Amino acid sequence: MKKPTLKLANLNELFPDDFTQEQLAKAKTVFLKELAILSHKFYGGKIVTMPKAGVYGFNWFNVWYTPGVSKVSTTIRDNNDSSFDLSNRGNLVAVVSDSTRVLGDGDCTPPGGLGVMEGKAFLMKYLGGVDGVALCVNSYNKQGKHDPDKIIEFVKMAEPSFGAVNLEDISQPNCYKVLDTLREECDIPVWHDDAQGTGSVTLAGLINALRVAGKELKDVRIVYNGAGASNTTIARLIIHAGGDPAKMIMFDTHGTLHAGRDDIQADPAFYRKWELCQKTNPGRVGDIEKALTGADVLIALSKPGPDTIKPAWISKMAPKAIVFACANPVPEIYPYAAKEAGAYIVATGRGDFPNQVNNSLGFPGILKGALVVRARKITDEMAIAAAYSMADFAQKKGISPDYIMPTMDETEVFAKEAADVAVQAVKDGVARVPKTWDEVYKKTLADIQEARDAMGLLMKEGFIRKPSVKMLEEAVQKAVAAVK
Image (cartoon, rainbow, N blue to C red):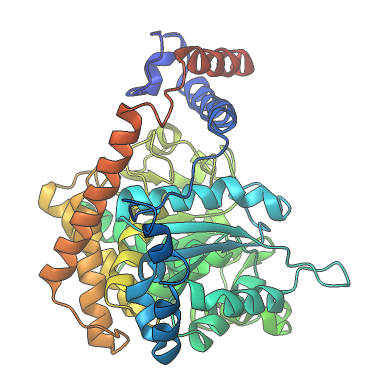
């Protein structure tokens, strides 16, 4: 057990040597949550607005504001697309949520999602060189129900200020209507990161997991545990990429999806789930243990664990079984338990375990690529291009059972992803300003480096204050006490 340092290089070393693997996993979860509360309070959140233009004398106020800025307004009036050049719109993303499905914590009330939305904006800037604004909205109607039309109206009203919209943590079925309506009715990309983002990164992880296991996407049997926005979109993208829906079985809280699910068919709001009912599980298998018997892949985005997925189920899977246990903040089964049960490759959504399959590897690069070419939407083909971009990047470095995905500190992956997405946008005919792969790659790398250099300078000069080690020690003490 070592004293913590600000680098937090190895969380395992912070806890007693006699901790079991289960105790260690629980302790790390508690530690990260406690440190999050302490550090967010210390900083007052994690995002601040700063000018990027200089003031070199008094009359620069007249340039940046009245009377000079009048010319900017009339120029944009006469050509709305010039707003992307004359304001920050071209590199600005609205991170919009009604906070009804925040991580595994459910409905956290409208302001409850601010920590996550600021986190998205933080990662956009640091990983993709993109500016983001957290916008948590009240979607209640007069009857006290969450109304998807209120979110749709809000986004359409805010559209002129942003280059793209990242939807986040909107519960199903509202999320389907919100995304599909806005994708068609807005003239900028509207992206649901819990759906398309999770789908893209999961497909990337699956591509490489199958490469390591020596299996083909078209041949494998896949079981999905959970049928929310994430897993339904994951399944849709995997099918689009070549997976066989007849070899897929998906479970929701009422059992499996199949063509006899009249309850899903009867509710038009769940049209995305009904599409999968008609394509998957033709044999109408109804038991998860039976479904997993001989299955090659389990993709779980369901109830946080660690006992949601049983080791006994995994032990019945096919040789070289692949398990994605991606519930947040605690996976459905801890990686060590899945491996002990016979899994060959295990991935989670967390960075303190190997094989992090997390949206953070996707949205910074995907949104950046869409913004650079001023795409009007992000197509499914662009999401799949991003998946192969991530997978191929990791493959070139050398994939293995414990390395199927790039990590967030591998900067170049975001620039390559942006370039691949931008090129696909041009192919799909949704780019306003076509650019070459090299142009997007170089632009993205430069913007990422600028963001990191600015942040590094603020840290060096003390404008970003350094938290005390005592704060970390307090979080460790609380974690140890919670486990013991």
